[in-house]
Image (cartoon, rainbow, N blue to C red; front, side):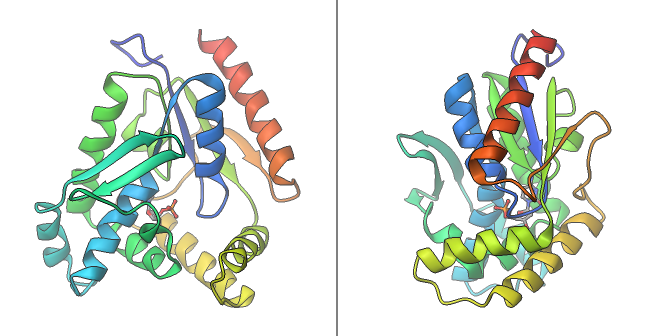
Length: 230
Ligand code: DC
């Protein structure tokens, strides 16, 4: 339980492409928790940088841009909707090209501080299931339930490849694997809030599991953990 409130937070962290967001969305519906996808917020900042033609390596320019951004995570019938300065960008932030921008901006302290406030505020007043890289370690260290969801880089690349192909994006599986490995490296070696497993986080490795098997595993973990904390 979060100290000082009666709310319960579930933190799900793990590398990109492990299925955190899809799983957390479904878990949220099943257990009655608001799902907050924090990766979508970093993607929204990345998209804004890309659209304005700002050099993503220019930390000062990227951090200054945050002051002009109004990012909202809203609940819709189809899950979380990400709104950037009034525009629904839920689809645009999923484009493959936005991933590298998101990863780059996520390394900047000013960007993280900007989004941290937004993320904590959301969890202050309601039961949330929040997924990202640093939720159990930095954003909500008091979260009563912490899960680390992972899968091998190869199996994540395969899933991502299938997903993009289904959407009609022409991609190469080996290139996706290289991108995933590069993002894993960037996310886990950056100085600020790197991706790491909190010692209390329950480990769920879905490398060898289908989506449904992975979901069953997570559902079991959440049910057991809820019994423990309630
Ligand atoms: O989960 P995702 O692929 O949508 O996340 C996009 C990027 O945002 C990813 O490269 C890492 C970053 N991120 C982060 O640094 N911290 C979070 N809590 C969530 C995402």
